[in-house]
Image (tube, rainbow over all chains, first blue to last red):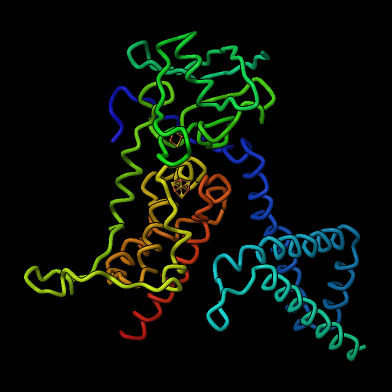
Length: 131
Length: 245
Ligand code: SF4
Ligand code: FES
């Protein structure tokens, strides 16, 4: 325990402004905010689909609002940024071994991005078919 | 010789409760470390300056200080790397006893809490010949934990960790790394005991992967990786516990 004579500086609420490293960390954490907005949009969309044609049209109009498009574009960029940081962390948390050898981290990062591209192509294919 | 300004945080408990900053001009060349600079201040300018050091070669782990808000080993950082004035303060998140000396007791307690030694009850039998046999370990088995065994207990990672700063009960990077290091050791049987520590609230789950601990570690131990591998182990442990009922 701290002795009577010692001085114990308390961590202030703005601790994360004190170092560029912490600001970057907070930026990574903050990517969740626009994502939450996107998810709420999605949920409201599903709901209005159930409500009937009129409310669905209303939702479509809402989604075309430039501000809404801007925030959703931000959500997209933010999730790519988050993925970028996450993919780099992943090989450190789950080091994989193949045949007794450690898989090089770069290969794992590449593999994850490959996965993203595959999912995107798949989604685009499904979307295009619907048109 | 060129000089650089050092701004050192002073705290003299016998003179009052508030720390203050004091500036010193220190001559330097390419080989002058921060520790050299502190020694110069103590020998030539102000004998009352108090700080810890021993090996001056980044192995004893005693000379940690905050240099411009980043935890560093004084003997392993050089004045040439900094634009003056260089701000030197005691390691963050620890109680300050005097000047640059902090109370490392909370850190040492956390280290001890994870039982950082080989636990193997099968070798306890004294009269048994087996007890005197040496352990065998292949290079491949050693490779699994080697990186995490390089810790010199300098505590820099604790000063880098905001979660420890917010909650001093958090076991913290080095202790959780040490726990993981012994869990990965093929000679050890103590994983069960350590998992109890790692899985409690102040264990691995208090970590939010800020990652600064690994950035400041002078030995490339990568404590953030160890702690988060610990989360995977802890989750596995819980799942197995659920299935076993
Ligand atoms: S993990 Fe690195 S920074 Fe932390 S105490 Fe050990 S050597 Fe120091
Ligand atoms: S004096 Fe030993 S690590 Fe710096």
